[in-house]
Image (tube, rainbow, N blue to C red; front, side, top):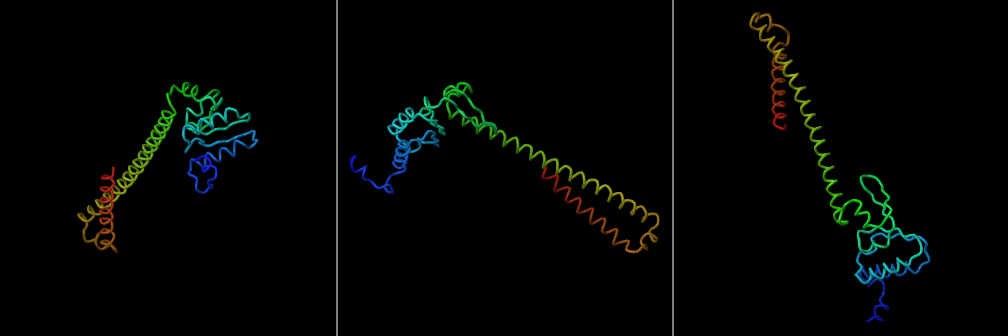
Length: 199
């Protein structure tokens, strides 16, 4: 069975087998800097242990991106954390880093990040809602000023009609202007009611 595994072509290998093959090739090269991104993905426990043993013997610099706490323990002497839009360097291993944050696990750290993002999103949503409400209020106030002005103008015309009807209606385009003002007032009232319902 072992002989058959050795003779397998690369294209028939599973994802995990391809990863193990790539790691073997990598570890056989004389590098002094090794950058690995989630190297334990698709690896079984035995393969992870073999990889960790090989990396512990590695004499160069290892830069490791991993969410596997057990795997990183003993491999890393520094933790670079990307938090709150910045980069933090912590001298010590992952356990010391979590202890420093008063957290029990990387999952708890991830949850904390998600909660922070959710709080930030909620805060942004509240800000946007407040901004929208303020804009709506400003629109309503603007419409109310226009309504007040139109009502005043229409009231003045009505007063003129009461005291001097014939002379008032004899003015050129009187009824066109008068009806246009009343129509505009009606439209503004409808807009005002619609905006009030949205608030």
